[in-house]
Length: 117
Image 1 (cartoon, rainbow, N blue to C red):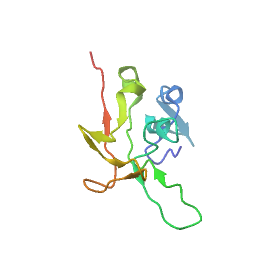
Image 2 (image 1 turned 60 degrees about the horizontal axis):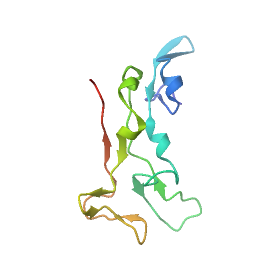
Image 3 (image 1 turned 120 degrees about the horizontal axis):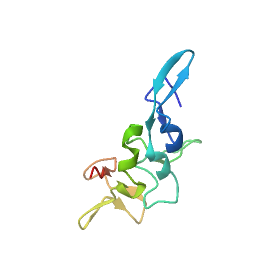
Image 4 (image 1 turned 45 degrees about the horizontal axis):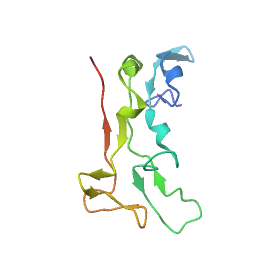
C-alpha cells in the first residue's frame, strides 16, 4: 500500500505494527477492513455499481471506505461493519437486476460500530 497515501492495510496484523519505515522516514498505518467486502462472500459485493459496455468493467466497486487506526482494532469486529442494502422495509438494491436503486443515492451507505466499553 502507498506510504505517501492513506497507507490503509488490508491485513490487520500488519496494521497492528502501527508504522513502517520507507527510505528512512516513518509512516503510520491505517487498517482498511473494506477489503473483506470484495466479491461474493458478502450480502452486497460493493458500495457502487457501474455497468458500461467496455472491455474492462468490474461492475461492483467499493469506493466507500472505512479507515481505522491500529489502536482501535481491539474495539471492532468485522461483524460491526456493514454495507447497508436496506433501510427498514425499503430495499436500496433492485434484487431483480442486482443494481443500486438511484432513488436516494448511487452509493450504498456504510455502518460501523465501535465497542469502546
